[in-house]
Length: 262
Image (cartoon, rainbow, N blue to C red; front, side, top):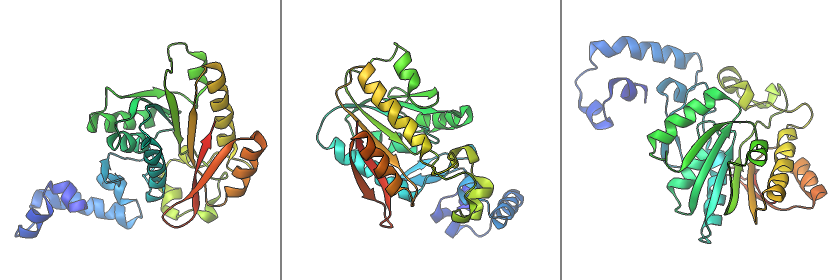
């Protein structure tokens, strides 16, 4: 992967090449040194595959995970009903989730992708342009949903789907993290909770309820990804609010995605 990225060769061209050109050797050696230091290969080649699509990534955003593809599956199953939706992706990072949904469905009329990190929004813009979705997706440097409630510029005439893969790991819970994740991936996209790690989701859910009420929206479906040990705390919170929800398992049969009717 590193050699293909640096040389620009295809796999077939690399197989047939008698040798690697000398001008590429130093770059390859430097990249391999980074790999030996456990830096994720996705950051080295600035590319990650998600839902069969290629995305630009660098240390400003999380590397897309296979586990998160279950959220895309759940949303696409919802869209089979042929209803049209606006899509909001909260703390979008690379924007792999909304882009994957839009590339696989014609039922998203407009999408807004939000991140508290300006540098993450810059990465999202690269991927929006890469996948030719500038007319559909609007990137916004915000935190959560409050600005939609306060800013009358945004009018929602359709149903809304909200997707969110928020930071859900308890602050500095290193024992359940791979060393390369702790070392190289952005802390602000990983840790955001003193007690449970679910605190930020609680705020998002409150704001989604307020958005529906204040903007007279018929239907909001919220899809969230949770950490492996948050099924119980999330169910308790949702039951307290009287919300209907379903929990879905990822490819490792761990409950990771929740569909919530707001």
